[in-house]
Length: 295
Image 1 (cartoon, rainbow, N blue to C red):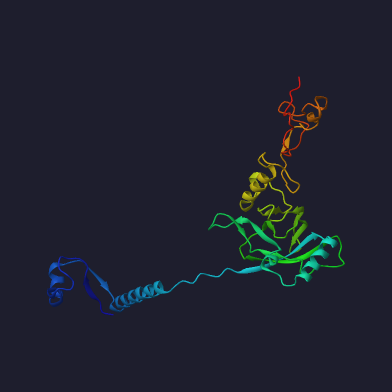
Image 2 (image 1 turned 60 degrees about the horizontal axis):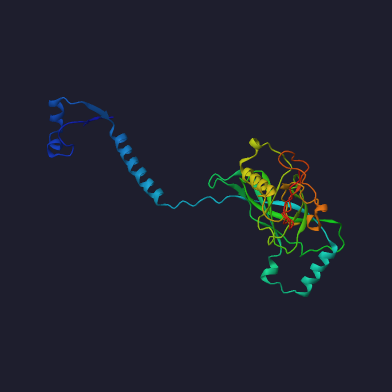
């Protein structure tokens, strides 16, 4: 195939009239550096570059549709304590007031799974959509002490291993939550009373049976572990009520009753020098005489 000579450098423009008319004379007389290029290859490369540029412009104009994450349904079995008298009252109430209002419709329990992994976009633990547990729709008349209800959790495909469950009690009364089992093998041993949201606005946290050292706790569970520990320790203020789960301690300063007379006063047990024995702090007000000093 014939080859032609193309100028690479020079003071003249490649598109000047002098170059177009006397290109052969200029190339021979000045002895400039030349390269041999096959015309079909050069033409194809130029056409391909134009096509590529047009394709890039076309791709830039196309709106990218984000990929929809895959959702999975996880079945769970929630075991609660069954009180026949209370459930019968609830059944009669629902029958008497068959037209449920919006407030009555919210008298359910919400469950939410928490992953052991964190979401890289938010830096927080991944959570599932809230599952609803409403046992008022299928109240068993002849049932044992504990009844198991089925729930469905909707999670993403990259959710990871669940490490905790958040429970919100929208009912007006407390209920006893015995256990929660996911897909028949992941077990949450709760064994606790869950207070209504109006008394304790914070969601109850239940962890799996797997124990971790502090430095081995998964990233998605660390904040929940610290939060649960703060709620159990308390802040040493306020009056403790029956529904509290706070375990803060105080000295034995309520053994006597000095308001009835000094002979009924008793010294305190415990303190900084001898911290034991100790009792759970109640926050009750002191006696009218206040603290008595014993020698």
